Length: 315
Image (cartoon, rainbow, N blue to C red; front, side, top):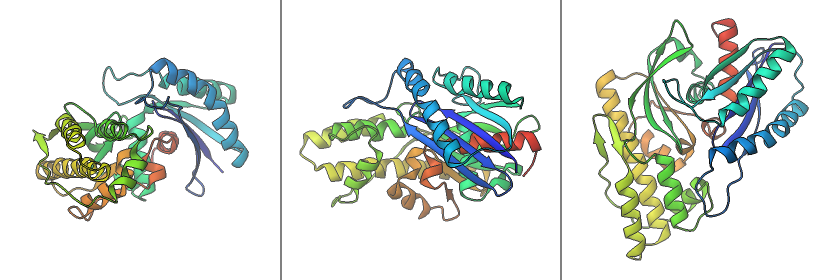
């Protein structure tokens, strides 16, 4: 038995996971960071504090349910993305634990990005890890990103990621949470906003704002405010918000396909776990793959798999 530990300390979730390469199974434990009611997110100092408190709890829980017998490597996400200057203090918490466990167990420590972890987790969830040997398009849509990414094999890393589209202002997850808070929902607002949207009885035509493969979303937040002021129902506003994201991501996907061909497409990130958004995109791109919700929201599964791939170099 060979096992690989992954640690991810994003701005929203404390996550630890073990990948067992013998049976291709993932075992994980994760917990959202506490956020004060009525607020949208955390300061980095608060995120670091909560990760410091939650990491021992999550690690103990994971190792109790799945006792580790043959740990081969530890990997932590140490930055949001694999680009110069990408940095958030919250990832120091996971990196510190990872390096400590590596030294104590005399095993390799690997570092990667939160975004790479998302992509690998999505590939695992859809049984498409073989795509690391091909060119494919990945979407990472969450509270901090609305990114369309060209992924290709890399001689120096597992995959080479090139951003080919993004949001020029508000991110999709920010739009969801701001509209949700506007409607009196609790942060993070995605699940409750989706429940509201299922009861929408009126839908509006959406014209996505796309510029050279990038999108703009801030205008739609203003539209939601106007709808609320004009007496529109919460259900219809929620539906409009999610329809906006679905149409926007669909338009970004179409632009990417025009530029790079009909390559495989994989969607990851918390926003992509929304069933309404998912169904609208699948209706246009039937061959697209979506990570299961547990592997779409922030998690350490892909980070653990990264350690396996770095250790063995292949599947």
